[in-house]
Image 1 (tube, one colour):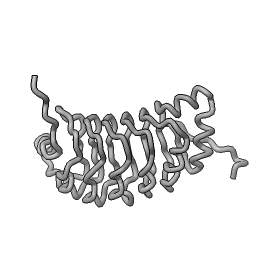
Image 2: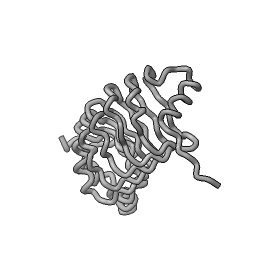
Image 3: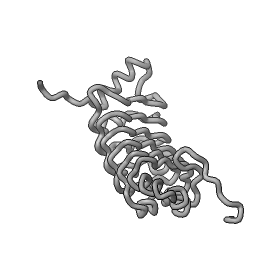
Length: 190
């Protein structure tokens, strides 16, 4: 049996146009998730998506975040269930991205997340983060208020020890929601 060729962004854009009857270059929301065979590269075809505000590329086989420099209005980026190992490549959307959904990937280090100055929601459950040192970089996102981190080795360990929420709140004092639950602060902390 021969190897199956990956779906390109260009191919998935023409599928999108067929399915939704909308020109990808004019679409505010692009659903390119779960392509068969999966997308492996965020290639240069992404440059045509000037109107895009929400881009969904989840459930593919993408290894690197790339080619986001033409996204002037991107506020939600969905990359869950891929093979992404780092946050590099997000710099071009640092001033617009409000939500990053990147659960079920292979991220161990959070270097590069700090460029996202408007990020309010970060869903990065089920990655490979093992160390609280990574939270210093997450704390560089000044507007972050909702974090999902469940299923990372760090969360599993500290949840078993019973101190997970306390440890996170200490490191991310602006957080309002952790792993889907509101953070209740003591009144005398003010």
